[in-house]
Image (cartoon, rainbow, N blue to C red; front, top):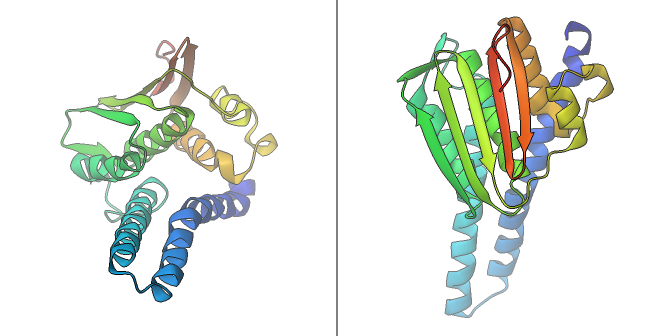
Length: 212
């Protein structure tokens, strides 16, 4: 997407700011409440809320540094444990979702890591009532499975993952899907999406592989 690169970078920044707005706003509100409160029990509660908000902000920053940025340096390989920790951090914010990490490889390519994390974020957002999120990698093939009682996948995300023209679906909400598409195209891989009752299956495979 060379002609859309500036817009694309702006979308990634917008997505990052959107996701950080809630925990950072909660920190600000908590500090204001703490400033005006003298009751020790309430102050303890506010301090706990502040700690939770600070933790959520840190978890999201660590995740997006790896999913969107250049965390881990500019080498070709990323420690799989680092990717797992980043994903566990954002899943921890949704106590109704159980994460299954099905990656045996000690290291992942940088492209695979970013694809995995962005697919996982899309899948996590689709689990509006909670459920199970499984992520796996075999060689450089990525599979992410979301299972829950109610799954909601945004129509624009669905269109992008199914091959629609990126220029027609550019928004902060679709930034992750745009990045997945670009990375997969660069590496000669294909994005797959399969939908069943209560299950969404996302995959990025070699272009000639059967669909997920």
